[in-house]
Image: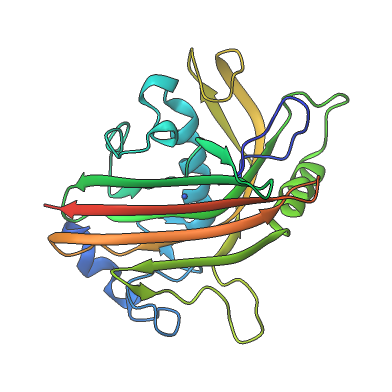
Amino acid sequence: MRHRTKQLKVGLIFVILALLLQVTPVLAEGQGNNPKVLPPQSSAFGKTYGEWSAMWWQWAFSIPVPDNPLLDQTGEKCGVGQSGKVWFLVGTFVNTLTPTGDTLGQATRNCTIPAGKAIFFPILNAEWDEIGQNPPLTVEQLRQLAADAMDTTKNLSASVDGHSIRLTDNNGKQIYRVTSPVFSFTLPEDNIYGQPAGDYYPVVGDGVYLMLAPLSVGTHTIHFHGESSLPDGSSFILDITYHLMVK
């Protein structure tokens, strides 16, 4: 996940027990060796991957700074704003500069989640909106800007309990990269965007996301990593580990 600055708008790049029988046919059609990952073509719990990605942004932007999980390095805030059948995980907005001049976003979190929740998160993602655009851009232009940001991504990886998830097909194409429908978001006071509170539209997103089927009760570890190129030639590096307790 990559955070925009005032000087340069690069987008934000960042990361069902009761209904399990309803999605079992979908899970059986998983990608290769990814039996716990719902395929990106599926309609998971009533929404497409793209629609869930829009909801992820709406949720992330809706939480004020003091409680926002994107600023939480320990996992203390991982349950804030969570509801429904799907639980969101995030990257981090807490970045440091490496000795080589790259930007590193890294966090290790401990998080307790209820049993029966699917888990949805971006490995890296970007959104683009009209804030600061003069003259306004078309939706097609916003989509191109978000796509341009995602096209620089590299070295993406994800694992669950030490088992790597295959993210590309035999031709090297990203399996789980999706675009969102056009959507809006609402910013509260003291928001992570640093903009006035209110509703914003239009917004579009692009990113690599995973939807995991509910994990078994007990402890689990999710790790994801991604890198992207910044305009100055340096890299943004995201590396996130979640230690989950499902109960």
